[in-house]
Image (tube, rainbow, N blue to C red; front, side):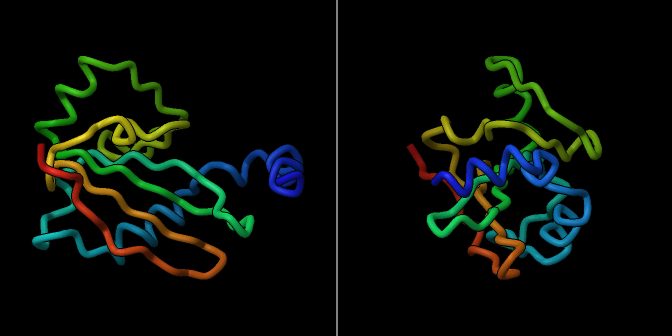
Length: 124
C-alpha cells in the first residue's frame, strides 16, 4: 500500500488515463450485443489492483441515460478527449444500481495488456 501511495505522489500524471490508453481500449473492445461505442458517453478513471498495477476502468453510459445522470449529479471531468470521452476522478457509474446495458463497465491493465470482459449493469 505504501508503494502505491509513493508511486502516485512521485508520478501524478500516471494516475490519469492517457489518450493512447483510451484509444487502445476503444479500438479493441467489443461491447455486449455488439453495441456501437458511439452510442455511449465514456468515462475513464484509474484504480490500482491488489498487486499495485495501474488499471484503467471505464463506465459507459448510453447517451439517453447520460443526460439524466448529468442533470442529477455533478460530474466534473478532469479532462475531456471529446464530447463523448471524459477522464474523471470517480466514475459516475459506480453509484448506478441498475440500467442493464445502458451502463457498461470496462477495465484494462496496461502493464499486462489484459482486458476484462465488458459487463452490463444489473436490471432493477
